[in-house]
Picture 1 (tube, rainbow, N blue to C red):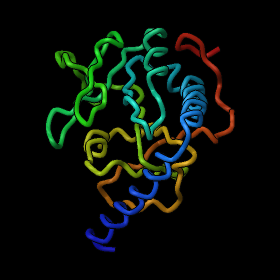
Picture 2 (picture 1 turned 30 degrees about the horizontal axis):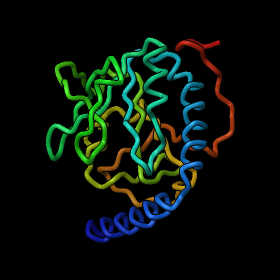
Picture 3 (picture 1 turned 60 degrees about the vertical axis):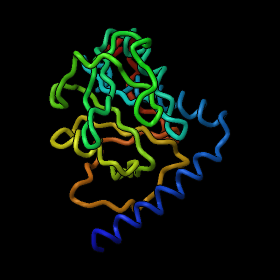
Picture 4 (picture 1 turned 135 degrees about the horizontal axis):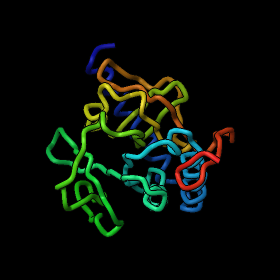
Length: 200
């Protein structure tokens, strides 16, 4: 498959899954987001992390605001993405939910970008997607921000994906970063619960 064919295949899949997600009831998004959040909090990587990078979920993505709030309560340093150009995003430290304001693509993002960090300084990176699969393959929104940001840090990544968006056989190439772990609302329990960022 050449580059053009791959691009078109991704584009068709992205369109189909986005339409599927937009048709889902809000009750599903609320329950699924809560289930995903529970699994994040149970991750040993979450419990051990000091610096966590979190995306702010759009309508077709898991709601991550409860995760951001709890991470702050747990004493984590929370970083969120800020688009700084048409090709790059930065990891910006936020200290309060009020630091977030609607930005690029209408997604809440920090206004004060004075405190940033590099991806290799983060302990855990939670990644959004349009779709993903259990083998770690991920379909993003097409701009390539995360693939560029994550180069060399794949082992820290956890992709959060609605089960309704999971899709096998996602087309990828050498520029697509494979996720270390994918969490969906359909995953069974099996993680050690933690409290205040520590194993219990």
